[in-house]
View 1 (tube, helix red, strand yellow):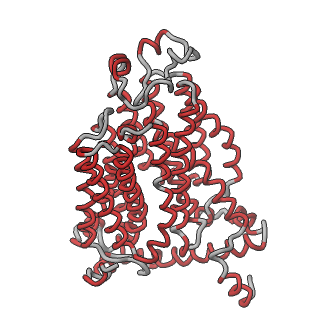
View 2 (cartoon, one colour; view 1 turned 30 degrees about the vertical axis):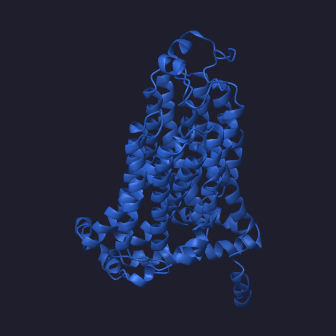
Length: 489
């Protein structure tokens, strides 16, 4: 369809130049990611000032600042325990976090199957609408059972939104640049964390706070209808007319889509040709391989430790003795350096980077614990803890890519699903056991020791940068073994 010379000329610049349709995909996908950050960390603020049951039952929502359900004039430091601790059970709002994390787990179980059947665009639009309506329901019905139900539904919707957003971003990118969508979206998510601090600071009450979270999502909802569907999904479901419409939009879109569809064809041909050989071995036989079991254990442990440390710090940023708004803002700002992730991976590879980030996270959390016990320097304590959180966030981003490269095609989705399950279970455990008043000593020891153990376990993993994806267990066993000189940075 293209002349050879013209194709070579444009292909060399393809890394920097993309079609208008591709830019539209990236632009639109930034909004649902930004808004899901609100629902992820809304409990950071409701955890400290919570509605009293007698006020909910007998008082109007638009009262003065003294009777507002969400009174920002009260202290956020958790030190004004006289009123708040006597008028409500703090564990109810810890259940809000746990319910949300449970919703994330449920969403991860069915989100992929639904998007495969009905398309990622449709699921993204529906879940974005559900997320916006959930915020409005919480604003007008501030009862604990309603709030917990809304949090669970929000978790399911947010998980589906994340799956669709990241999948669309990756599937609209050429294989060489697929690390960039997760990196960019992670940065947008951190901007949403910072934006949540601003919304909470400006909000005047419970109703105003949740309306400020829900109304912008409704306003941006029509924009999602202009989002193009995944080319891979359209090709698999034989929606050739839609694909043709995308290609006819501009010459740049036509050329980029031709490259994209060629890469999809190349990826699909190899697994299809090996299906017959893959069927000769049962899934049980593949899972009995010592190589697979070892990798599954290590990646599951890293996912579990990452969730404990990351969310343990995120949900307790107000316990470091720093203003809660500033703490939440800097919690989001601390993840901005994740934009350097593709460059660091290209320079160091998967295993050295994972080891370094895990080790730095553990050391930072340990220093944060020591400083909090022996020095009265809350700003330094929070800084060290946020460095640990940044490292764990980077580790998880890399582990998602690393896990895909470590497991064979015939059982890859099952292995990645088990690792994700461990991550979600750790999120729920963390939300249930972490108390409102701060991070206790045993929890902080777990946050620091867990990543350090994970860094040591990474020594048992191979380096997968620049190596073709394994299709069988035999391919995994042929991957490069550990060499001491490889660990030198």
